[in-house]
Image (cartoon, rainbow, N blue to C red):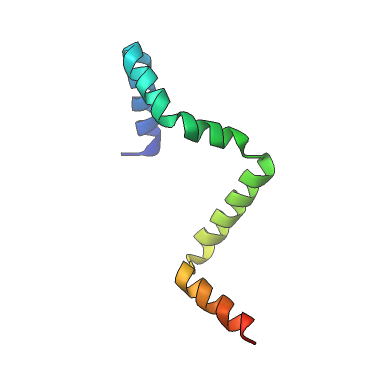
Length: 76
């Protein structure tokens, strides 16, 4: 299912749901929504830039690989 279809179905569900269910959903997502509101436009742009870079290369360094590289650099 495409993301747009999921959004449409969720919007419809929210519009038709009982108040009790809407409040429960809000409680689940409230913290995430507040965090996203705190993101600056600059921060969001940086995340977008990093994601685009990832999409080009598909190269990811694991935490273990990163730690190994850092240790090697620090030991010099």
